[in-house]
Image (cartoon, rainbow, N blue to C red):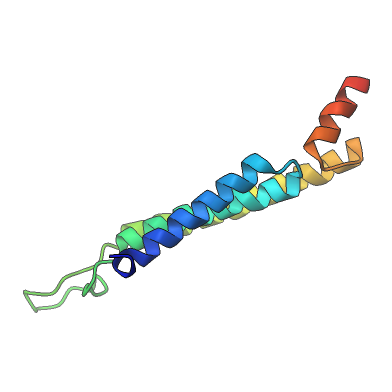
Length: 117
């Protein structure tokens, strides 16, 4: 049972690690790493669902009993990866700007310094 759905267990483990990291850490860089882990787990989930066991590439042939894998989830994930990289880059750029403005990337220190402004 466990090894039949090994990839889904990996997805759940990565998702929970990412969610825990986002919720438990006050360092903004660590939060971005947690968000990236969560994002990667979603990518793996969609890629896993798109694979059909025994399926081949969707190239038309004359054989009537050929099973094809659906390429749509993989295409959508390629787009999501590009968007995810851009979003992560923007988040890290904002963290750099926050570091310049407040002198820290720790969320608790930023909130305490905000009261002093």
